Length: 193
Image (cartoon, rainbow, N blue to C red; front, side):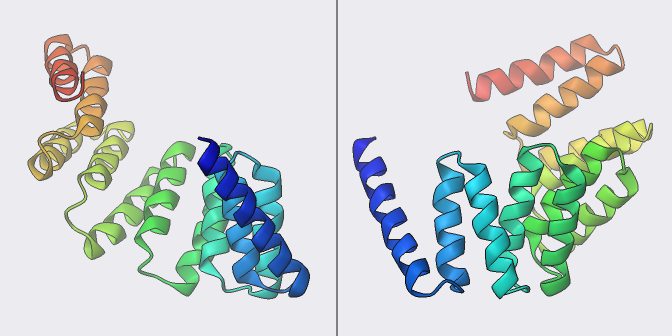
């Protein structure tokens, strides 16, 4: 732990020095922002990412990091805004599609979430977690048969997906199918006790 902290302090000093030498260095601002984010200093990270965007408005790393922090802070509208900026510059940014889809899901905008998840799967069709996210959307929309089929597809992609097993278990619990829920929860526990 000490070595990590000591290296972080040195890296922080180095990036701060680089910023003092070139205050418009988006690279240094983003990297210092990453150090702040990784140590829980979100306000300082947001400040650096925002400043980086002033000097390099198309910088997808800064926008993505701002969106990631917004999501973690339950500021879904901000997350969607930043992920949309990333996608404007790189339509195939799967991390942005995934996170924006998750933000739409959290806001109850299921059709928009499904669109982002579908766009993601066109680029990377084998992601079981994204497929499970689609299933959760179908569930929230009351499309229970679609939800069950999609959960089954996700488990075909990864039979040991704890995320999918727990998500489907929650679906079964919500529909009073306790035996099926117990089977999924037990399977998840057996995978990762």
